[in-house]
Image (cartoon, rainbow, N blue to C red; front, side, top):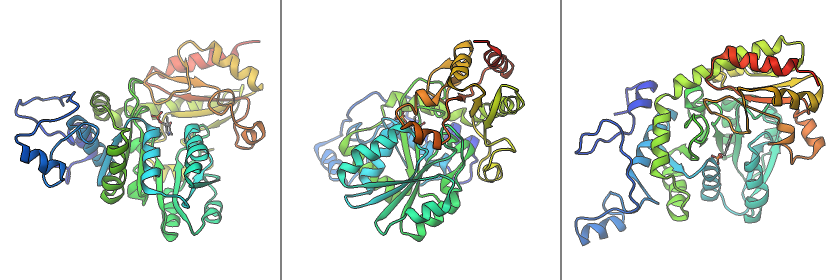
Length: 393
Ligand SMILES: *Cc1c(COP(=O)(O)O)cnc(C)c1O
């Protein structure tokens, strides 16, 4: 069905296989196992000689609809859904790498991904080197003969730096490695890394794919051999599979994904422009601003600039905390990708365990505040921040 349909049609209809009941909306198949017509059919399915469901740790129709829809939106051959974004990253690494292999990763990645790499993959004999996301020469210099995977998020969290996906895919392929992009911040509505040469796309569906902060889930998208055999083989054996209920919530999220991402981006750009002119604000990080160092790259590579804005208030931690505590509309939480706007202080939360000097070098200053701009009226969001920025000690 997918060949000649456009993004918005695939987002609404991709992957649906209607049953004999003629249901219009996608059903939730809450079943752990499946029955066979006969002993010989059971035997054929277990032997892999006949297609069909066996057990929901392996396959489930609602989960498969989500996988087919997301694969179509990312332009990938195959998608495997996982219990969380972290399960997607773990399953990718464990299924495709082995002891002695090496990963080159951007330093600016999700905190739990760093812990997964440094504390757990290292124990399995997989080493990770970290480089600056935007420094191509550093990526090149970090590659070793045993490097199998390059890993990044773009735009980065919280400073919204943008990586050149095409250049890094070329670099990976010249060295016989794969490029995996965690596409959580942009989603396929704004950025399709596979079309730019990446081999694997990883998602935390928990964020914008759900979009309303309800469920935890993840996904890996890529070619049949890496994802359909490699990652799927691990998931069905080790078990970090997605629940059918969560898959159904994410399916509903995909139907409105592009509209929501455009609205998040429009609200974020309006706030970023206003913040950039504010006397209490020292600096704004948002790829949609002309002042952003990779603005031109972001324009070429993305269809929008996303909902994450970071900015530095004058007056350090005290002023940042005062701003956060004065807001009434923004939720004080480190989560992101929700219809509800959120505000957080990275230096004392998401990046609080970092060594203070390394944190300062990475640009996570004491005055830095991160917004995940939601879908409320932007005038109310602006008034909320204005109240916080004008608040007196
Ligand atoms: C949240 C997040 C993850 C982890 O996803 P979970 O669903 O929380 O396991 C990975 N990468 C990025 C960029 C994230 O924001």
